[in-house]
Image 1 (tube, rainbow, N blue to C red):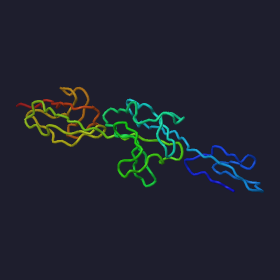
Image 2 (cartoon, rainbow, N blue to C red; image 1 turned 90 degrees about the vertical axis):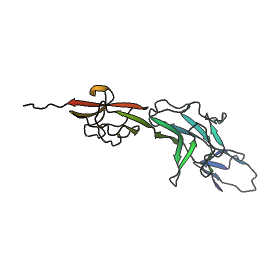
Image 3 (spheres, rainbow, N blue to C red; image 1 turned 60 degrees about the horizontal axis):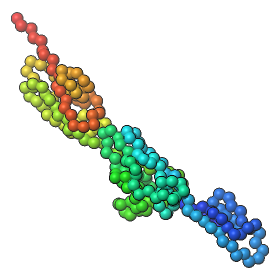
Image 4 (cartoon, rainbow, N blue to C red; image 1 turned 135 degrees about the vertical axis):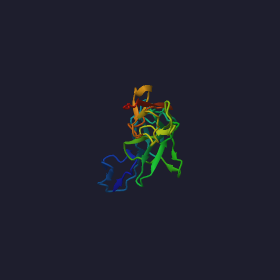
Length: 232
């Protein structure tokens, strides 16, 4: 007689002494020559699930949780302390945390921990149980959404101001603008400080000079260079 242990479960013990052998996930009862009355006990597996913080500035606590298959989520491998909420959500400069998720066989992202750090037993979209997502050690991945910030463009004495503000996405190129003009001067781009000092974010052509790297609303300042003219 062969008994194959289902995924998520494990062989624990039996009362069939002398007749049972166990290898991998298969339990075999052999050499039975008469009626045999015995009990085979199986238990639920416990799997470590790592929380991939994906470039977090501040790490979440804990950084791993444990799944007792089809039963619940726990703080420790013993399965004695349930976990309903993370002690601390991860943080990442310029991004908003959207929870921890994995991907099932259909390619659907299944959320196990929401943006508030709550550990869920069911995915809210279609009530898919999270307690049978894994049949071995696994990983949940942090979901991050880049923040948008208002960038004010101080044209600094321009005759025609052009674009006066943009909504910039952290980590992405600066949005296109109409550059300003100023009688008697040549535009040299937008910088984080006046007079063309600091970090350049727009070129003289009004194109993005770098990705947005300021985690908050900010102001950029136009650089102007006075033109030289020949006077006869």
